[in-house]
Image 1 (tube, protein in one colour):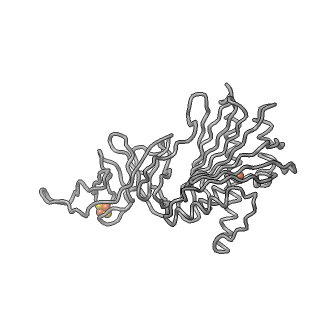
Image 2 (image 1 turned 135 degrees about the vertical axis):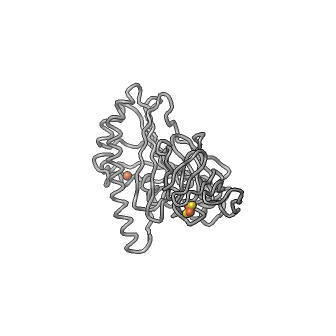
Length: 338
Ligand code: FES
Ligand SMILES: [Fe+2]
């Protein structure tokens, strides 16, 4: 498994209509378009003729038309028409562009920038399901994928970066049980105390026990669950798409159930979530700028960086194309406070 041989969100489905769309991923430019049946297609954004960007062209019937001399490419990347060629002249076999596999699910278009994996993209849990309220956010971070994922799964920063909003510093300790599998790491917080914050005051139901779980799912997903009971459950899932070294597009899906007043909760929760994620954008921008100034990370880990160390080692191994060790499961209990 190389990190490129995986599914990544390229754009929202509703953002891909009649006009071709340019998408950058792993520092490569791709073009997305829809054929006459509405199926999403993807190719490298470079015309085989004189290398013009195909994303600046248009769609005609099933073909993507280059804006320069009008060569027309089908969904397999094969050129079907060259307007300047006289009747009966054949199209050279080299008149083609590399294409990529595409999937559409949960309101997103996913592409595989490398070789497609055996598995399909992972669905967002409870996305748009009856009884659940879902909203989506797209956020650009001036940082790398690992720094983003670490941030989404890192609790201690919430008491500083999101102080007052999400958590406040609290001396009470709890146990965090860290479980590791071949392609995931999850943390269960045991008897997490409720710290005073705007979020807790507005949304935590009274007299309910909080079950809080954070998960990293290879190679680029984070999932955070706040479950109080069957009728009160928040799930925040984020998928990180690497645009280039220090630019990451994060697609966050927040699905929650909250009895009958989900729609009302959303009215307050959505703008608040955007405000909180902007605080993460700001701190990661500072971190990214410093990484540039000092030329790469030199981290000091402590045991309360519960998930981060695993994120890095699992992704490094995938980057080198090594499979995960088949017996790699572990469980560890760590004392922590926020
Ligand atoms: S550059 Fe695309 S048709 Fe000439
Ligand atoms: Fe945060």
